[in-house]
Image (tube, rainbow, N blue to C red; front, side, top):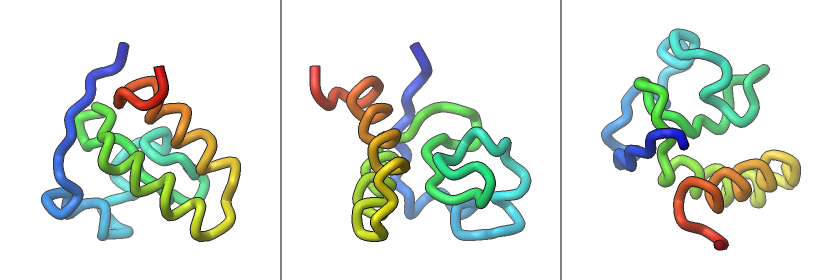
Length: 82
């Protein structure tokens, strides 16, 4: 199972910088082509706070496939549905 580190998103400065987002692998994002909806920390661990944000934001913007994937990852790694 993947490592989980729940670092508060306000401590993760790289997620707000387009330049810094380009430095991390594309698979750290739920929308890798556009580098949107990050869900992994720089070290590759999964961040449940980012997954919850992705669920909310994707729902607000009508991006059902991203919301569904974020929810599945949240349920698997963050103690969602059992």
